[in-house]
Figure 1 (cartoon, rainbow, N blue to C red):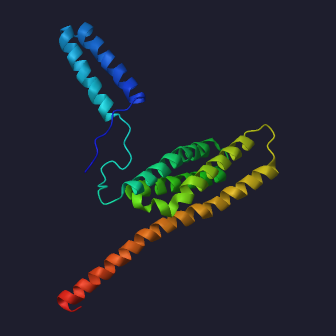
Figure 2 (figure 1 turned 30 degrees about the horizontal axis):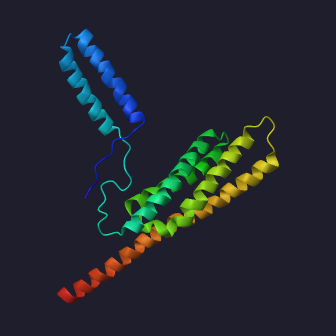
Figure 3 (figure 1 turned 30 degrees about the vertical axis):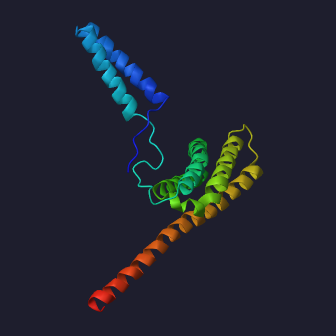
Amino acid sequence: MARMRGFGNDWNWIVAGLVSAALLVGLSFLTHFPFLVSAVIAALVFAGLVFVLAPRQLFEGLDLSSLSGSRVAFARELLAQAQPAADRLAAAARTISDKDMAAKVKNLSDIAADVIARVETKPESAPAVRRFLTYYVPQAAEVSEGYAALANRRVPSQARLANVGAVITKLQDAFVHYADSLADSELGTLDVDLRLIQESLKEDIGR
């Protein structure tokens, strides 16, 4: 059963408040609507915007009835730790002027986002990428930010840049490994499904 979107408590309230206030002023003073009618319309717009702009909840729309609460809680905790680091990684990629290195960090960011999205879609897969989400993604963010800071110095140390760049290159191997391992676990389920289908076909039509 899909969960309802919760009301947020930050930017969605601010945007909704500004829009509804502007609407109230416009209706009351520019179009000369009765103030009470304008206030009701503005209140409805405010409530609607708060709801529409509310941050999406984790696992929203998923049927979690087949999973234990501990598994869902575990996946939620991992994603809560990993998402800020993934955001930092994406931000670091945008601040690196070297195109080749920026592309490598962007690739790390894309892989991290893909793994996070997969875990959100299948919370039961979280244990397979626990180390990736809790160690490699935060470390990659820290290293990438360090590279950006070094590169932005007036006289950056080329030796240190090369060392940090080599670590970023090696991190790509780890990221690909974990992304592939997650895909392999999904393909393992596919293999089981195929065997079951083949057995059913053999029983039903002798093939």
